[in-house]
Length: 412
Image (cartoon, rainbow, N blue to C red; front, side):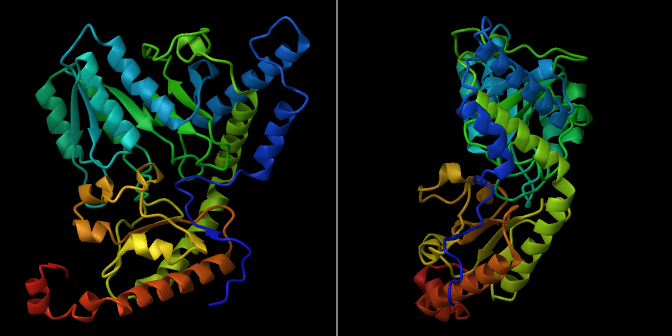
């Protein structure tokens, strides 16, 4: 198959996205002449930088249906989640033994933060998900009831899953939290541009977002901290200059913040049009692959976001497959876990066995992909899968159950 493209086709938009040219344009002034420190209020350079940060904060708040006073600027979703989860636990040290709950398919940033709350006397609890990666609401209800009123400090949920693309029922989880007297923390890193973020409709207390998943720069994020109806109290994880309401010290990165704001504004404004086009491209790609023997999607349905395609292919070793496809940028799972030989924890959590998890490809179509790229990607994937299978003795005897059992393969 001739490669008509000058570089690899990028289909890993869950890991990160290219920076939109309009976002670059919003950032550029603060990388050139407008270099002032927003903390320097005695001259026009600092004052202009401060106004830029204030304008960006207001735009970020509007994109989340929040207020500017509820936005804490950070370096990204991982820092935001650390501040939310661990900051809550540190503030709650005077009430040890309370539970901090998350779900087995959550991002490693959430899982690690929840585990770390034990250092502050909390009790981490990881609950199961269903076979598509959705939180198990019955398990959550049971856990909250067992803990009793006020016995659970917080529940963490991923709004859009970074591997499976499923959308969590955030508002339903919030309703259970209100009954139990628990706070709700939402990892919304993958949400902008894919679903609408409305912190009031979600009834969330803390929401983490990042720029680089929605065509903004790396190193820019925000944490929504509720100040209306109920006030959420956090302990800072760092000390220093007292910026960001004393929760996140350090000189503000004005260009990154401007980029975050512009990325969120565009994601909100263009969500429906982007999703319609991207869904069509994703569905075409799956149509090209679904006829392969042993091809199965790991999650599907109306609650899987546009662009996401997580699928496993029997008889394929995904690590070798990706090496054979240098002209396609794909992944086996979360970028934060890449380089490890272990199967994805999220895929095991939905009930896949290790072999299926290690034969899974994560594809995410994005804003800048074209129909020609998708056609080429489908052809290349089919070619590489068929070549790997043709070289596999196990695949050749896949229908000989006795031979497979004798080898201890245990496959389908």
